[in-house]
Image (tube, rainbow, N blue to C red; front, side, top):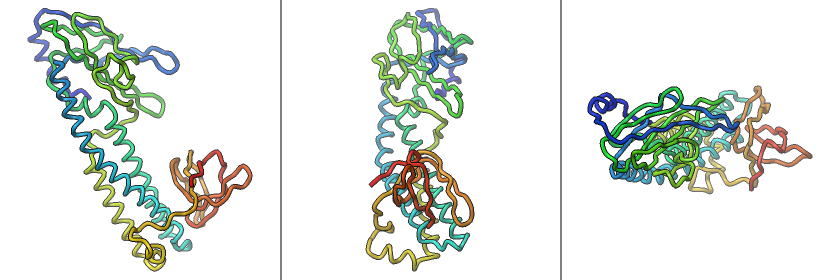
Length: 314
């Protein structure tokens, strides 16, 4: 987010009379309710300095993408391996069952973490994390209105960012609009960076939730290596059962099965030692279609689930 409040007092004390940008910041919700956003920092930058900071950040993002792609590929392999372990374990041994389930859920957590970081990189958040020194800064009042005095009538990039809590989620808003003062500007849904607006000096994807701005490919790589170590250690405990499946392939992954299903919603199934809830996005073995249901196999146990709860894949 904008790490700029430290400049506010210095700028306020030195600002001289000149052209002014005034306006309002608000969002119209899906229910057509207008929400005025108060206490939002509104900041002006020199266009050339703003564009240079965007270029520098984009270079860093472009360097991260191939690393994330490689980590995602290995994480997908580990998820398949964790699923395979569920079929090879001794189902009368609760320790093996528990560890197998733990590995599978950790693999889901890793792929989820990768997805969240990828969405963060696609958004305006990393660009707003590294903005240059501002020309001027102010804050909106309770009605979302602001006034920003400037020392010249040269073009500026007017930027702002805000968040809003919604049920079970958090919405993040980013604006970067080129303005020639004096001017009256409305920052709304129409000129967000993810609105594909011609007004916006930065075009990105939207961002929901609370991503960790300290995430990086190095953080994800460390998670991947920890999961690899856990999978290797677990595999050694029943090496003889895994060896047959791995012998014909240089990769530790098992041969591909005919079909799988991807769960479209959480599903609770019963295994030997009780119930386990598989989260949405889980990929489990497809056995057959039985009327309006699908038979799946997880951890050596078959279960029927509604066909609407899963997508069958080759």
